[in-house]
Image 1 (cartoon, rainbow, N blue to C red):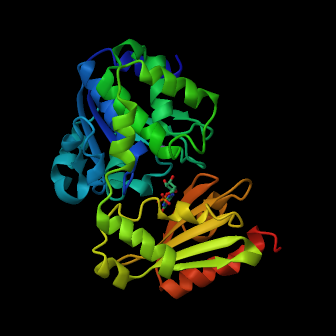
Image 2 (cartoon, rainbow, N blue to C red):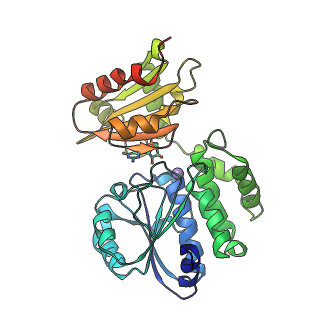
Image 3 (cartoon, rainbow, N blue to C red):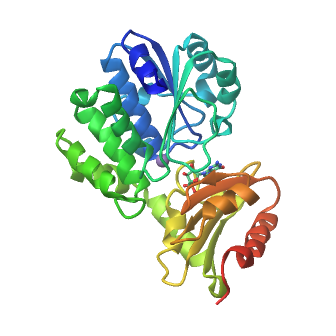
Length: 332
Ligand code: 5GP
Ligand code: MN
């Protein structure tokens, strides 16, 4: 019996399930996890969803998002669920270091492990690897996974809303990472009675004034363009974090603005966090920022969207990034 059939068999009787997704969860992490959570509960399972850190409050419109356990606040409860788990799902990340301390508990567990993801270089820690780097999003894969498990007829508008949120978030509203399947699945999801206009409003039109001003500040005062290497950099310092009272999630999407410049083909948002310097990378076409993140910034991601983090100063990380440009980008 192959491992997917084994999983299908396991899911025929009520199980204790834990779903994990990555730190700083985005719309796809939350959308795919909640869709799976709701679906497994409909099938009679006891389900907990656990993230290492908080998700942006703008995504709290998703059904049952208030039931997600956050390791930063509820470590004990999560550990209890991990100890009890028969099946674990790992959604939207490639390696266990992305779930921080929970990863240490996971490797000790005998639970049946299912990895559903679309990042490059997945680590082999699971019993089932449902993986496709060409998928737009993990939500797209969860939709296909529902088909494999015979769950399609149980999709309802709440579950469809979650999956559509993942599709919209990871494709920048169907601008990138799309393939024919993405549009087919989006079309299918619309049939479950979701309101796509209010969903788009919920995802994109819920910014605070502060965050829009922060974007302005980044573009006017913190942006550097390096024309000979078709590169753009935005740097955010600790003082910016204090001045704008920047919270988790507030810098989401800022790096994409750099790619709107015709000449820019590689973009970096470099931010000074309390203990680390985080780098968020984006590219156009054939430039693989995943390789750059993996080989130089202890990170990973996708070909055109990746990230990582290093200890050290802002200057160190900025200089390191600039020094790498000649290796990856042909000078004009
Ligand atoms: P973002 O730049 O929006 O934080 O992340 C872009 C992509 O890179 C996401 O798919 C995310 O999972 C991945 N990514 C971001 N930061 C890290 C990191 O520190 N490590 C790894 N492995 N991937 C990251
Ligand atoms: Mn994703």
